[in-house]
Length: 48
Length: 507
Image 1 (cartoon, rainbow over the protein chains, first blue to last red):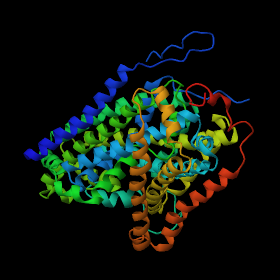
Image 2 (spheres, rainbow over the protein chains, first blue to last red):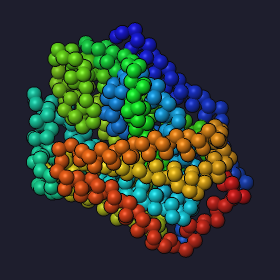
Image 3 (cartoon, chains in turn green, yellow):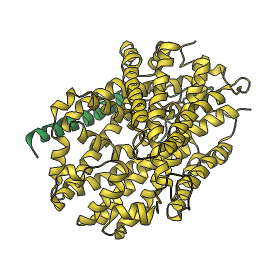
Image 4 (cartoon, one colour):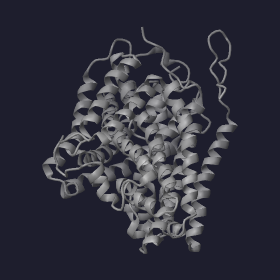
């Protein structure tokens, strides 16, 4: 592989997979909120 | 009495279902070639620009519509603004048409998973595919003899898909994606590693990633990037509206959307590496350039790959992994496409899931099984695929952004809704990207496609055949959509009061 191709391979992977990691971290920082059901109890998150 | 609307158990279930929808055949067989043809390594720039300026904004729009109005595409558009309902039915029609042929390709892939074991195609994969396997007569008509070798696996695919739908949004669709997507990623990674270990693999990667910077000055390259993003991300034809309608009220729409969008692109890049490693191997083994073996679509998967599988040491395993990947990626996408149709029918007619699966799902299965596994099915699939994508998906997305942005002026309301529940806030930039950039790009794509098809026809196909099954289908879907939208709704369905509180901005 030429140097230019290797650089672009690395850039592409960093940008796209880096974007995915950033998106996952962002989501993790904002945990899911759960609806409060009518009797005042929280609806609990799925176990999965 | 209406049943309570189904829900995804949590955002994890939704994200898996949405990723399952977005990752489909296009990621595996379309992206690698599009990237290679349009600047190689330099393509990453227009590709990311397209993702950020149109793909993700459109994804957020679909989520906003589905979640704000908590309904299938037609009912959500109806609640958004009266006559816009016909856009929803247009999307339902497009999904109906795509589902009936998309399932056929999955049926081929099921058979090819088996064929890979003994390389049933012998030394002529091309002749085997069109001749021995599909038994194509080459005629441009409808019908001909039914081909059980395709028809029987197709019936099984449909039965499987409709059972998944009958099991419901969480118990069927989400559960399927939560099993299939991790399995898909594992087997795909194993396949990519096997590909990379072959001699010549680096030639392929070199061809894929060597940047051609001049390509960036070519407008066609930019259009290709936007096209890839539109077709790959499952935006603009009702799927993400439908899925988002099953999210709980307090759901982080944009946070989840970013994960879905980057997962889809991350998988595409991986597919590019795997496919071009294999093509590089093939080029070296046959003493030709990568350009001579590079292909996309049906030709790549069912003709070029079988040749690679026959040449590669351990090719049988490579083939099984490749075709199984197509099956897994395809089924989770098929399920999402079918759901658009079922949800639309359920909302309009008040049908139960069982009834919609049996009648609407059954109708799709019958049309698919009757028309495509025949000696004339390949030509039909080819023309319908082209027109459904380039006129259907692009046209519906174009009309939708213009109507919502410029006609109904609903972007601010939708943005307020999104921001009331989401972590990643959207605002003026989103309005501009959706209201200006997206319509310009989609409009250019749509008009240039119309001009090309009128001037050049479609491939070598007779004009009469293209008129009926290309133009006829594309225009017929619009006419049907308008007519169906004129049928009155059952009382109280459109004005659901529960929408006026919490999570919406109307409170």
